Length: 142
Image (cartoon, rainbow, N blue to C red; front, side, top):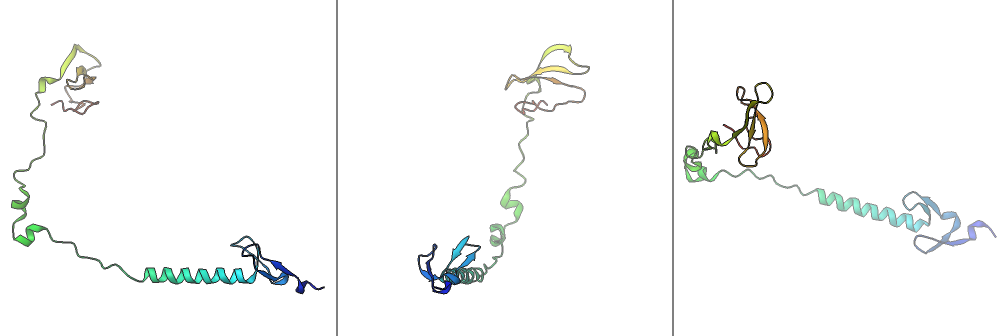
């Protein structure tokens, strides 16, 4: 009996094929029949065609819309009220809110201060005004 006459069951698909036709496949990582190889290649082709079709339609780039004040003929300063909108400042705070804890000088020019908001104690240099706010809660000193 020659080896060409031996038929073996494929471990991948369960079909029978000649022993000489089995091939070691790097995708399946085992010996598979020629029909499994053919099926795998067909699936790869289908996926490649599907990916090509998926990439073909390009998204049209839309032009950015113009602001509403351009369409209505209103000037930008009137529409945004730039004269009236001002950033919030902490100038409304009373500069005496920060109290000196010790009248003595802590380190050279520095004085101990206590934050009225969080009660955090820290060193403050009145000549260089450093730090400009509380290191813990960021409340402005002056």
